[in-house]
Image 1: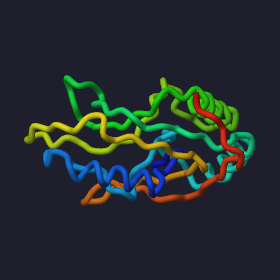
Image 2: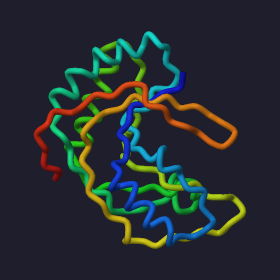
Image 3: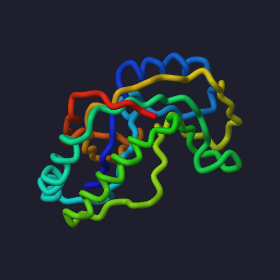
Image 4: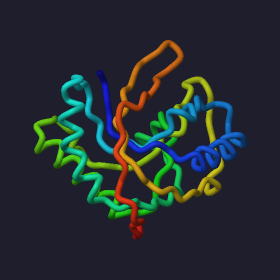
Length: 181
């Protein structure tokens, strides 16, 4: 199965996206609310046996990590404004999030799982560009602070109407909130 570790967007975050999205260009193919997430580590194709290995690897990482507070505040094109394919929602600088993501990658690698170790750029994909339509979006109006309280293992399945992400397992982070700086 094709899988990744990620964080679901909170219901209040989805509400903020829905309100903002209602005012935007019709030239976008919006990500379904159920699919809004931030990828922590892309895993690629994994076996069912890998889930139990991952459970043992992730348990101490999430138990040692306090809840993270992330402020989502900027929009940008991926891969670039010159070649817009995905409209992404970006967080303010959050060293604690970056450090946690690296601990997750190292734990997966130590457990013998191949983990994407490329440079991490946290984001939430909001929309894909339809090739035939010019697009624009209202800048500066989509700001939301979200608590990251759990890490989720998602399965990614392609369907005729688009990709669907299914929760396979989740791990709760420690209860005390961390300060994002």
